[in-house]
Length: 580
Image: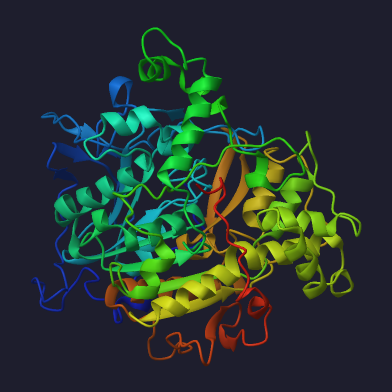
């Protein structure tokens, strides 16, 4: 892995609890020790050994649960089998089975149902270090803890901050979130679904039980995630199953204000999967038939709509994600946040300014049913975002008039950004702030295009960037946490090679990365993102409505005049697969 820039921990260590050293060489209060730990670590299940790179120990593919195969498909995770020989954990593990995104397969991605593994990056020395647990996004149907391109490896965060970084893979799509009446009947809790979230909880339990051996503090764990990862984070905030497993939470571009489908509705969708698999009247029984099907067949049954629904197809797709099952969740998250009935820890919540431009652009370049937005169909396209409510769509079209935007598709992107991300996020942070310290941000940097440029150069996306500009699109902020700028490079001695570079010195990208990671790392260490010399980030108060603007330079602003006031009294957050 190539790097242009190697930075030490000194910039943030003074503000971080436990950066891995102490002046007297001993083990100070929260300060760790100077001596390196052994690279081989004993976990509860057996010994593991990773690799060392420039003062960081990295472990890839530690089992945290048994492979969910055969009879374990669609069951809660159980402990992995123990081992005695040292397990070499130096290679990125299999990702969980998932359908190619819009028919596109990511180079280097290997998927399997045997995928319940996690990754750890930690300083070579120190103890009692802050722990940051990353939960990946991808609409609960895509993704992996350490991306195939390496862009979400935690080693740069470790090197810069002295924190320990953990990520995990969890079951996705139909294999991670299928509910079915017979699955509920065989369950000890009379419920089903949410297996992917149970996987995440199992990974957090592994962190609680094992992270001290890697130098981490099990009593100072921050969960952070983007998109579906953020939806997961707020899910853990309200789940009684996750109580005590984390102590701070960061939500990037996701909230839980949209109601989850009920178990009955989700079970009905599961019945459609059984029917599509030809298992409804199977002689061996419906569940045995479904468990005997190949994973590709399962993923093809009631598949989600392309591009997370940003396509004009009339064909109904499935919706796979959290379910109000009565066990993992006992009430809707929006109600929990309002009442204070949640795992009360300090919160950071934020979004990017132009979230949905990514999705409408991907809709435009989708070959089978490209998205076209015109003045004539603008209201109908908005209606698709608000549960089919055409009268509300007409009102929204007047609130977001086409004359205010350079292109109808840009107007639709603004509506979608508000409806899916910004306004629910603001609604949620206002509730949270009544009970816990809460901080709101908006990422506005318009030039973070590296991930998409990489995809285009690597022929993952057969299209150029749109003329209207993606600006601060969905997930544009992720590299400014992990510190990697993905750039396609050529190593002529070894063929085509993917080269990951850290941000070049003395650039806007580097300054923004240092700022954003600094806020996140200080928050993970202490619960307060602020430090002397940095722009002061005010805790959220609905009256002043202030938030941190992540741009170059960083500043503080207010959304008091934005369009979320239009949505405040509207019933626009309908469950994606209906109600009882």
